[in-house]
Length: 349
Image (cartoon, rainbow, N blue to C red; front, side):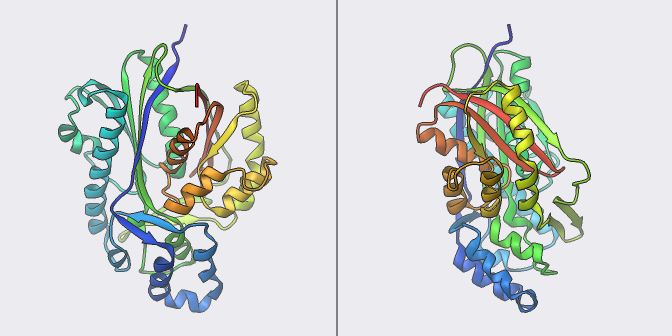
C-alpha cells in the first residue's frame, strides 16, 4: 500500500521593502512618461489591479533606475538566499525537524539564475547535510508553487519516511525594466511583488493536518506566447498577453472539472494562484462560482500583489489559518501555457 504524503508545515516570508501601490503608480508615471502619453488609460491599471501593498527586495528608488543583468543577478542571489533561509528555518521549526534531517530539497524559482543554486549557497548556513539531494526547478513561473509541491510529494512518496523540503522563491520586482517602457513593462510594474514559501513533506501514517492526493497538469497547444520571459543583455523581459483573462474564462473549466472527477473529489474548495483581479474574475465566471468566492486569493493579492510561484502557498497558508477543512484543489497557471492542479485533504480546521 502506498503511504500518504503529509504536509508537516508551511511557512511564508516577504523581503523588507513595503511598497504602497499609489507610490508605485506615481513612480511609474515618471519612469514610463512617454508610454503614458501614448496610452493614458494605462494609469488605470494601478487603481484596478486589486492591490494596495507589495513587498520588494529593493527600494522603489532602486527599482526606478536602470540596472544591467549583472546587477539584477547580484541582488537576486543576495535576497533569494536570505528568504530561502528564513522560510526554510520557519517551516522546519514548525515541523519539529532539524535541517540535517532533510533528505531532499526542491528549489523553485524563475525570476533569477544562480549556478550553483540557492540551496547550495545557503546549505551550510541552514544546516543541510552534505548528502542532501538538491533539485532546482526553473521556468515554471506562476505555476511553480503547485508544480513544485507536486514534485516534492512525488519524491516523498518514492521514499517513505524521508523528509522533503520545498522552497519557492520569486523576486519579480528585480525583473522590472525601465529601458523600453512597453505596455507589458507598465502592467508588470503594477502587478508583481516578491515573496517566498517553504513546505515540509513526508510520506507515512498519521502526520500533519494536510494530506497530498492526486495531481494533474494540462498544457494547451500553440500557447507559448501567452506568458513567459524574453531574455536580452539587460535581463528578463516579461511576456504577458492581454488575452490571458479571456483565455482563462474560456478554457480553464474543462481541465479543472476533469480533474475533480478523476480524483473523485466531492465539492472541493478551490484555492488558486491570484494572478490578477481580472484573472480571478475569469476563474469565477468559468467555474460558475459566485462573484467574490475567491476571497482568500483577493486578500493575498491586495496585500502582496502577484508574487508568481509562492503566491498560491500564501493563499493556502491563509486558508488553513482560517480553518480550512475537507477536500481542496490547489490550482495555478503558468508558462506553457499550463494549468497545474493538486488535490489536498485538510484533515481538520
